[in-house]
Length: 393
Image (cartoon, rainbow, N blue to C red):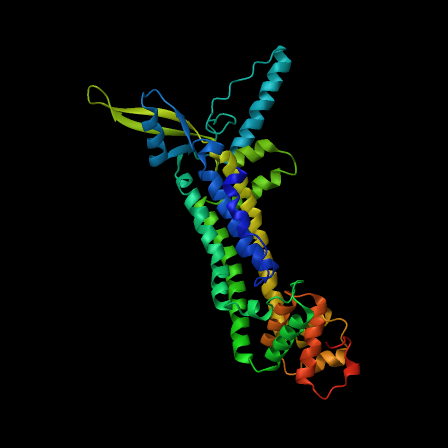
C-alpha cells in the first residue's frame, strides 16, 4: 500500500527556499497530497477489493455487478427518531416477556439493508433512496485535490523565483564567508532601492491566494454537503455518538450516507415475454473505508477553513498596524538596537516589510542580523558603527 502512495512523498519534501508559509503549505500541498492518496487507495482494487459484490439468482454475475454499479442501488429511507423509539420499545417488550415466561427467543434481524432493527409499521418515510454517488467518489476527490492546489500553482507562477534569487546559497555551509557576505550586500542594496510597486504586487498576489485558500475550504465543505445529501448535518450527530461509545447510533446514522448493504432491482423479460423483477442484494465493502475517509475530511476541511480565516485576520492586523510589523521584525533581529532597526526600516511600506520577512524565514537569524546591519549602512550612512548590535563584516 505504501508503494502506491510513495510518489506523493516527494511532493511534500521541503524545498531549500520556502515560498509558502506553514498554513499555506498545509492547505495547498498537504491537503492536495491527502486527497490524491485517498484517490489512489480507493481506486486500487488489489487493496480493498471490488467496489461492490452482489448475490443473485441470475447466472451472469458480471452482468449483475455491472448493472447495479451503472444503474444504481437503493436503500429504504426512514426516520432515525421513530426507528430508535420503536427499537427501544421492542427490546423492552422482549425482555419483559422473557422474565414472565422464563424463556427468551430473540427475533432474527430481517432488515439487512441497515443491519439494525426491522422497519416497523409505525416508522415513517419508507421510500427508496437510490445510491449513485459511489460512482463519483474518486473523480470528486481528484477534483478537490486540483482545486486545493490551484492557489499554490498560481502563487508559484506569480512569485517567479524572486525569493530563490535573493536567498540563493545564503545557508549553504560549503559556500565561503566572503561569498555569503557579497550576496548579503547585494540583498541589502536590493532593499535599499525603490521596489515598492513590485513588492506591492507581490504582497497583494500572496494575500489573494490566501483568500482563495479560505474560499476553497468553504466551497469544498458545501460541495461535500450537496454531494452526500446533507453530509454535515448527519455527521454532527454521528460524531456526537463517538465520545459515548455508542457505535449502534454511529452505524445507524452513517448507514444513511455510506450503507454497507444495498438492494438492486433488475427488470428482464421471461420466457413468455412477461416482465420479471429480479431482486439482488449487494455488499459495498468500500463504504467501510469511505466513511472513515470522509469523517477525516470533515474535520480536516473545518481546520483548514479556520486556519485560513485566522490567517486573513492576521494579515489585516499586519496591514493596518505598523507597530506590530516592527515588533515582528525585531524578533527576527533581536541583537540589533531599536534605533538602528528603525533607521534601517525608515520609509518601508507593508509590502516591503512582507518581502523582508519572507527573506528572514529562509535564512538563519545570524545572517538576517548581518543583513539588517548592511541595510542600515546602505540607508543610514551617517549612523555610527557603535549603534549596531552586530559587527558588520
